[in-house]
Structures are given as C-alpha cells and as structure tokens.
Length: 134
Image 1 (cartoon, rainbow, N blue to C red):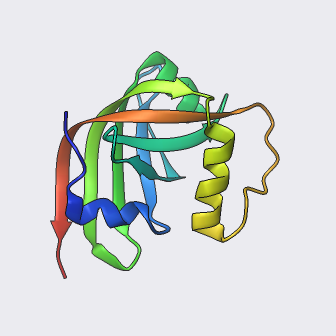
Image 2: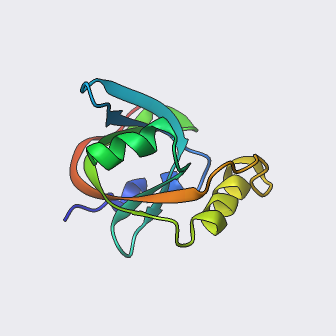
Image 3: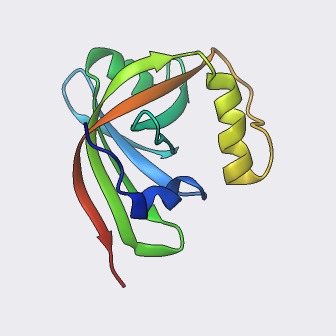
C-alpha cells in the first residue's frame, strides 16, 4: 500500500482542488474538479459526490482513477496519483460533505441533495508525481 508523502499531507488541510479522472463505458476519460480529503490512518484519498453523477456511475463500472492536485498557494507544487476506488459508501458521507464545505467555503454544504451523498475511498497504487518546485 502507498501513502501520501508526509510533506504533502498539508494539501488536505486547505482548500486544494483536485481533478479526478474516471473511465466511461466507451472507455473515454472523464475528468472533473473535486474537493479532496485524505484518511491518513487508512491511507485512502476521499472524494465525496452524489449518487448518479457521472463519476459515480463510472466507478461502478471501472474503479480505476487518476487524481491530480496542485497546492493553492504554489501551483508548481503538485501531487498526482493512480489508484482504485475500493469502497463506495454512504456511511458518514453527509457529515463529510459538511466538513469539506467548511474547509472550502467556510459554511456547511448548501447545495440541495437530490439523491444521496456517497464517499469514494481510494486506495493509492502509485504516486506518479510529487514535486515541490518554484
């Protein structure tokens, strides 16, 4: 199992936007910006979405993902990961989206939830790029 290097774990304490790539049925890449989190104890990236959105439908068919993020304070500092969604759960997902919203917006999640929130737990298979440059 691969962990996020300690010197990059601060990216999950601030409003760092990530881009997650999933594969469609064709299979074509689908890339979308997301809020990102990290469970250091379980060494899993966390992405929260709503059931039925394109990325959620994609990972049901193929759990492979690519995730890329840049430090909002230094766009030359970046982390890129290849992994697999090894769990999709609703457990704690509603509370988690409020935690993320407070980090990213300063308030609880305000968007109406049309279906239900789900949490992707992503096993990290490879750190493709982790750079701190200026």
